[in-house]
Image 1 (cartoon, rainbow, N blue to C red):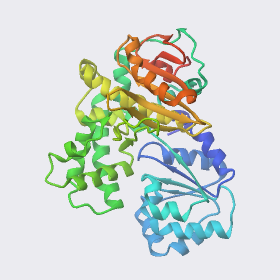
Image 2: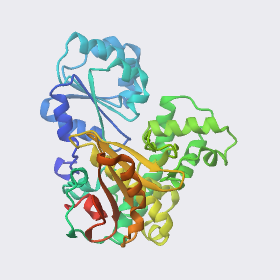
Image 3: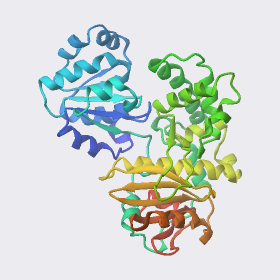
Image 4: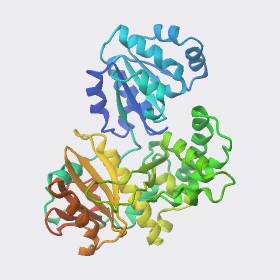
Length: 415
């Protein structure tokens, strides 16, 4: 495939920046999200060699003699799927300490590095970690977005600036963000890709990480989790269909999180508010996968308005997570919910400021839709930058100080 045929990845400048001052740069994220393509694009210009530990021979050589393997590596090298050879991490550390030079190693991994202790501990202080998600809508469209800077800068301007998407929004949600799936010519072929993808990850990557007693339960658990996306995590409900204990199901959820199939969105907390719900929210890693697991196409999703709203929340959460990776400032994500059931779908924090995002699948917005955002603003005081209700409309509409209704299309089009 020619580079002109590839989707642009907006994380690329961050990778180049990290290589300029870090001996090791790790790009981690789910399989098939584009890590290898991005690493090889960056490495081609700088003369990096490429080795993959999906190759049985390379993996066996590294496992048999990690010290010798690292000693024989080219001066600059990409090591793909490095989580498959944890034996290598100590030798990489020794090599970096012996010759501390920026940009020596580009690593990719399909398991969460912070949950692979030997990697995280061995290369602490020597490695920049960058997360590559499936593609954001801005990358798919090849456009730009200033949504997050505008959110924290309070710069939304009232007026007709967007467009209503209607059924096109359901099509975006069901398509998801994996490059290989998006290149398939039909919806049926794309759905087949997602189903095969989930089965392959569960069968191979989970088994690489740990031995589990009931591997056949994992695909069923993932399908059940798809039905609970954007809801408070309820381990008991997920465990109910299985003849295994609740702690075992909790362990399996963690395993699925380690390979980026699930996200747990933590609750926002404050010492000023004692009545907050402390349960995380569950989100699947991509809505294309959600819809494939639930047997949904754009038409059936659009017709089930309650389910559409639920999956749309995950879609927007993942879109914001993806956009956050190429921002200058680090962002953290949480959700707000108190014991009166007043909630905000997403709470974003950066540089001492906080913003709230509420998702609405409809094309109209009322003052009641800002109830949670008002509660959140009262709780955080001057730190509150803005509160936004994202809706399927065509205009930015102010709803009081620092509160706006904003078109969903504004996430990947200028507003």
